[in-house]
Length: 368
Ligand code: F6P
Image 1 (cartoon, rainbow, N blue to C red):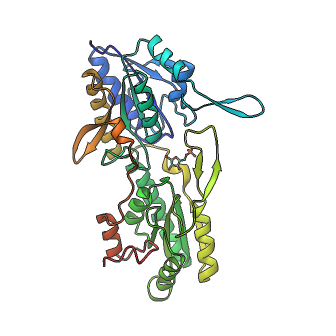
Image 2 (image 1 turned 135 degrees about the vertical axis):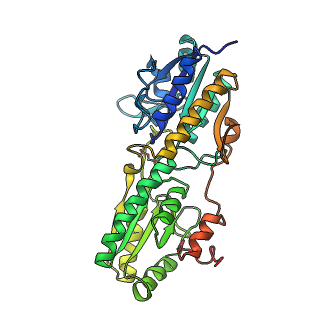
Image 3 (image 1 turned 45 degrees about the vertical axis):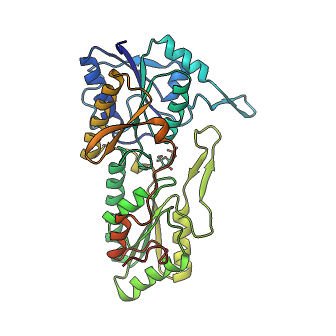
């Protein structure tokens, strides 16, 4: 049976490149005679019935635009739907309503662009009978099954530029500069931007750090090397034996935990224990906003066009993926089996150590 109507949605936190995927899906689909319907605000629109047709005009001139023309939400999980009854938040299952809308709109398939939360939801909806093709998005780059997600390169670009800027002022004032970047439970952004920006210390969730090793590195630099240091901290980094720093827990979110704040602890402790003047920057959502890099525009376009091909071939239940320089696909149920974390002994970490970067744990990273 020929695929005639596809829905497209962007789920979870936004990131640069979403619009490039929407364009990459819509243009070839229309060319193939397929009607494309944009579902608004991620899965929220699937439950609440918010949808509109996308035309060539809608997707023209958007490859360079950050955000998503469809809107997004990380509170729209149909299986975990928060209802505020005025006194408390009750979680309800709205998946049957989602299925009803899917059928009512006459969709043959949904192209779901998102991170691990979106892929988990997609897998459950697929089990209920919806045809889904996934597209891996996230600045965190922590989705298993693809060498890289789109959005990551743009986030690393922004974080690297921020570190470059911190470098000049750190050097003028002989200070320690701590910068906290995003990434949730993975250290990819901190690792990428830390190496590219020439950070002296990089702290990532995969390598629990020892306070003494961090202090030693900045003291060593202040006495023997340059009189400033740059410390790049992933929001999910934690000291050995310590826990994550959580900003808030919000029951309404697909993942209730909002990380953030480890940068403050690291900066405060460095100043207290070493006596070196320290300043702290939390980069936050600057990493998610703005235009995608050329790399992300290209990757997103390739992902989008491949997703349509999969849909047209009725290869449902797959997520498009980058493997080497080829776009391929993996079963969504395989992609969600685990998270893609930074392997401790990967070449990136080994190279960083060779150029003098400390990961705050000399024991675990002693390849030099
Ligand atoms: O997953 C992307 C991400 O930007 C994470 O790096 C970060 O922890 C989280 O989303 C922030 O979520 P929110 O935009 O809901 O604060």
